[in-house]
Image 1: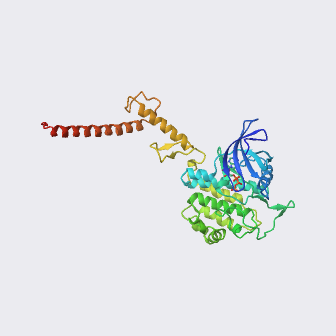
Image 2: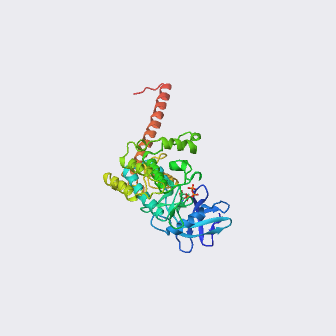
Image 3: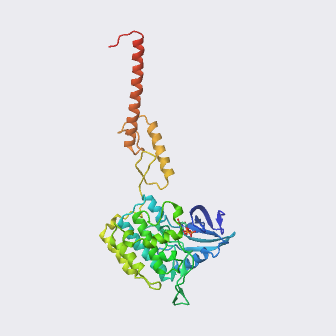
Length: 371
Ligand SMILES: Nc1ncnc2c1ncn2[C@@H]1O[C@H](COP(=O)(O)OP(=O)(O)OP(=O)(O)O)[C@@H](O)[C@H]1O
C-alpha cells in the first residue's frame, strides 16, 4: 500500500482486516479530516467494494452510516475513502471483560434496530449482521461493511423470490437459520442475526459454538442452532429478548417486520433497568495485570507502562521518602511511594539484622563477653 493515495490521502496505519480487504487510517491533506480507507485487490470477483460503494452512495451519510468521500482504483486495488469511526462493539466488549449490563444490551438493541430499519428502507438487506459490524463514534452506533448487501426489491416494486441453494452468506456464529439452509435471505434474517448478536453480548458466548473448532462446521452449527430453543438462549435474562426473537422467527420471507414493536421492547427494557448506567461511550478504566497501579485510562497499554516506569523512577530517585513529602509535587500516587518506602525499610532492617548477627557470632568466636 502506497503512503499517498490519489495525491491527497496520506495513509497512516492498518486499523482492520476483513476477509476481502484491509482498512487503513488516513488523513485528507486538503481538509485535514481523519479518514478510513478500505482497499481490496481488483482480482476479487464479484467485488464487495463495488457493492459497498453502491450502498454507501444510496445511504448518503445518514446518521449511523459512514460518509463516503471518494472511491476509485489505484495500482491494482479498488478503494473507498470514508469517514473514520471508532472501535467496534466486539472490541469494546473485550475492553469490558466480556460483560455488558442488561441496560447496555437493550440500548444496543434499540440502536441496532434503527440502523437495520434504515438500511431496509433503502431496499437493501445486510446479510452479515454481527457485533463487529457496529462501530462507535461519539454517542452513536454506526453500521458498516456493505459488501454482502443485496437489494430485495427488483423492477422498482417486486420483492425478490424465495429461492434455495444460493450458498451460505454471512458468519457462522451469527447467521440466521435460513442462511445455514442456503436460502435466499430477506429482512427477517438481518433481525435474527441481530438477536444472536444481542444474546452473545448478554451471555458472553453462543451455545452452538464449541471450543473444539473442528466441531464448528457450517452444517453442525446450523443443526445446533435450529435445535436450540429461544427460551433457553435467553434464560436468566428479561423475557423481552426472547419475545423479540420469537416474533422474528415467526416472520414470513416477504413480510415487512414491525420495527416499532421491536424498538418498543428495547425501550421498555431501558426504562425498567437503569439507563443511566450505560458505559459504552466512555473510555473504560481497565485493571492492569502487570503493574501495581490498579486502573488506567490509556487505551494504549504501552503508554500506560511507560508512565508507570517514569513514576517509579521518580520514586527511586527521591531523597525525601515520606508519604507527606512536598518534594514530589509531580508524583501523584502517594500510596505507591509509601508502599515502596515500607518495602525498602524492611529490606534495610533485614540486612542490618543479618550484619549484627554475623558480628555477634564473630565476637563470640573471639571469646568476647556479650551483654
Ligand atoms: N469507517 C471505518 N472507520 C474505522 N474503522 C473501520 C471502518 N470501517 C471498517 N473499520 C475496521 O476495519 C475492520 C474490517 O472492516 P470491514 O468489516 O468493513 O472489512 P471486510 O473485509 O468487509 O470484513 P469481513 O468481510 O470480514 O466482514 C472492521 O472490523 C473495523 O474494525
